[in-house]
Image 1 (cartoon, rainbow, N blue to C red):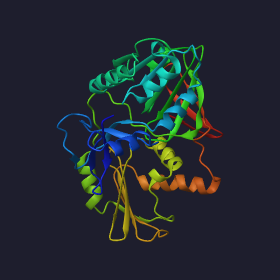
Image 2 (cartoon, one colour):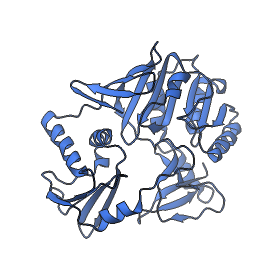
Image 3 (cartoon, one colour):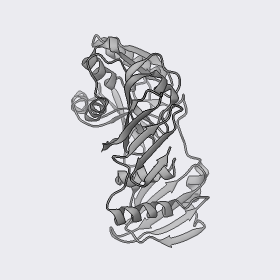
Length: 344
């Protein structure tokens, strides 16, 4: 990877060019961190790319090496397995080739540019796996013993179940959460498994050039409006992104929330924004101070967050990790643990 994006002080993105700073490039290449390679439609390695972006959401990355290895360990790969993986930068594909040999590896990505780059980079290392432009949620080009994705999905696509051989295993993450889901295919065409006692977060699967952007009107109202309801939380201010179990539970009950955080003049503010127009804004000054909360829209997002924190304080844990996973042949995915269950 000759280039990557990093956040700057203004919440924008700054382009780093490896050839322009070989020492930093070498240090970054051997670091165990995720490198963002695409923001919106801006690929970090395209010639003529603007060096600074005012904003945008990550659309592709090279996952931190230790997490790629953990995902493959969850897959329990054996020497004779045929595996389907997602492409991105091509790093995970390269590791799969090193483990199994390129003839047992199929790698797909919805972005033609990324597929072309990964093919060329792998060829430089003498690897020629099958790399194709495909939507990971659509029909898949073959039959596999393992499917491992470093993109997230809300519900398991039926195409995965059809492409898995009997007894085959899938490993993925649930969109908007830190939950790693593993499941083995059953004789009836469905699958059973569990949510692993591990954490990971991946970008959601794309279906083309659909770089998600929240409606600006929701963000404007949440930033400036008083809302329909004002309250004071009983808990210190929390950014759910810093508490993965809480964030995961919230996403399971109210999918699609977008988070924003800002600090100014000693006040920290957290926003929860939803595509249906619901929003919540919570602000506090001291580290342990209770925030003042403004909310509006069809759902009371901060109230939902508070109920999850009540459960955590009452029980000492949340039921998401270690939950049983049951997937029907048509892809309906249910998580359950004890008396708790939810269907994605």
